[in-house]
Image 1 (cartoon, each protein chain N blue to C red):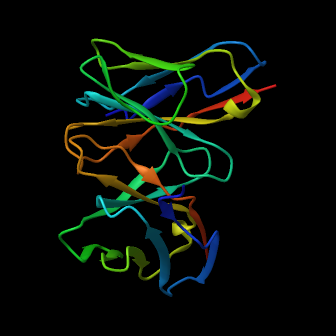
Image 2: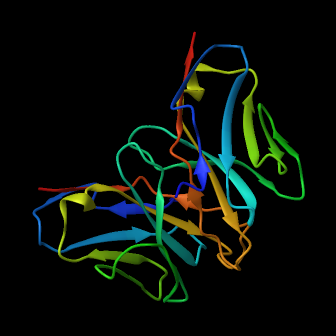
Image 3: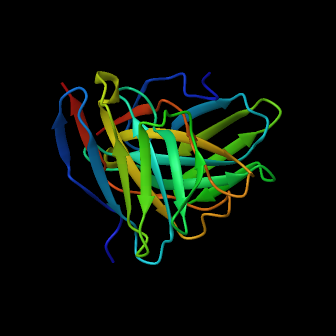
Length: 113
Length: 115
């Protein structure tokens, strides 16, 4: 049972353009969402998060949008840079008094010069 | 400030053997979580340790066990290894593990291959 889904295994974007990565979830108890970036031979690196009480959170070039009614979130990267090429994981957690992350399967982003 | 460190980097074992993986959390962090990442999949939660106790467990059999030491470092033990245990094992540490909004910081992982 895949509670967090990233239906696009890969995405190619040109440098300077916008990258949009999508994530869907099925568990309505999720109330905190995160995006992690992973380079080869490294562990996932925290990128940005959003609480379910918000619909948007911005940090520099990265913006996460949350649509609770559609159980959908997206990560926008503007402008995209070649160094952004990595695998991006969407993750979610419930408010259970501790954080247990449920991850999607990842989207590989390739930003070409 | 050192981040989360894990050892060894790579490990090759045969079916039926036992393995121990080690993790040192980021300085000041008291909560350690372990995840298994199979090829082509996202990380899956194994369990979390806080104050030397296993606080929560994912859908993993009892062959997977762990320990947290007074200095907050942690070990993951897997007994009776199966081919399907081949994966990248990730350790993550956090400052306030009792908060669902906490941020987990991941180590580089240990790549386990079971032959």
